[in-house]
Length: 261
Ligand SMILES: Cc1cc2nc3c(=O)[nH]c(=O)nc-3n(C[C@H](O)[C@H](O)[C@H](O)COP(=O)(O)OP(=O)(O)OC[C@H]3O[C@@H](n4cnc5c(N)ncnc54)[C@H](O)[C@@H]3O)c2cc1C
Ligand code: FES
Image 1 (cartoon, rainbow, N blue to C red):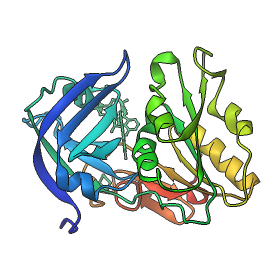
Image 2 (image 1 turned 60 degrees about the vertical axis):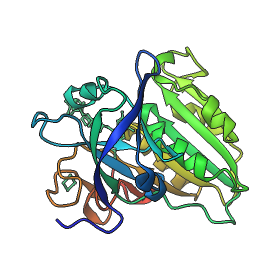
Image 3 (image 1 turned 180 degrees about the vertical axis):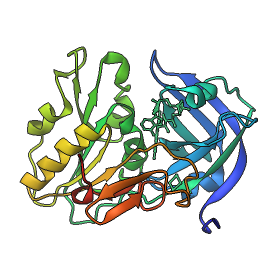
Image 4 (image 1 turned 90 degrees about the horizontal axis):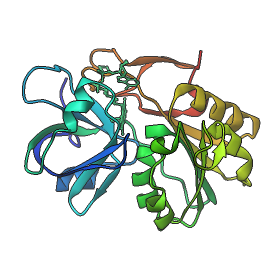
């Protein structure tokens, strides 16, 4: 499949790899054109090794894009993501992107933006909050993690003027319980926009909340991917409009269109 004009495949130089805590890493690389082009919710498809194993690229949200660098925030869960933890400054990184449909930016009439993130699903909201710094809307992040090790250092969000509320399964940070325990922290406005990314049960709860309150919401979905370009149909999910590919028709969808079974 031919690449679109704004999709760039290139080899970049790793500028840093940082172990954030027991669970998360961040990796940044020099990519000025990509940093300029990428929009919140889009992802990059990384060839994690120089050989053929693993064969397919791995998709990651862009966490930050500034000063000519692109950064991802990731959790090593398997072969591919574990290989990324051995990258060193100066190593080459083969990246395809930006890919997929980004979150719709809120219009000027939107007075409140609520991000609902579960675990690593919070990653695209950092880039989003960077880009909304000058937007007058109140910005709120409702964030759910399993334990303390699954919560981010929230200071970066706070520096962007985002109010942060956290819930953990074991109560080690914030409220004990699911992220839905935090819905009552927000005083909703008629123009509130909800954006969510995380495990499917969490996004299903957000969908119910959005429907009950007559709000508008978008969700960024995750699926295991191969081509990343809409060609193999391997990442298809069921929506109210039939099967759609997460990589090409998404990853961002209207929350009301998603079918959670
Ligand atoms: C659009 C998009 C954005 C993403 N952004 C991030 C991000 O910012 N940070 C981050 O850490 N991860 C992110 N992911 C998930 C990341 O792509 C997977 O963790 C990674 O591909 C796993 O590859 P692996 O080789 O390490 O694991 P594998 O060995 O391929 O798989 C290990 C286990 O993880 C499961 N798995 C693999 N991929 C996924 C997936 N996409 N969703 C759910 N389960 C999966 C497998 O079924 C298996 O059980 C994103 C995924 C998508 C689709
Ligand atoms: S990964 Fe091939 S169509 Fe989405």
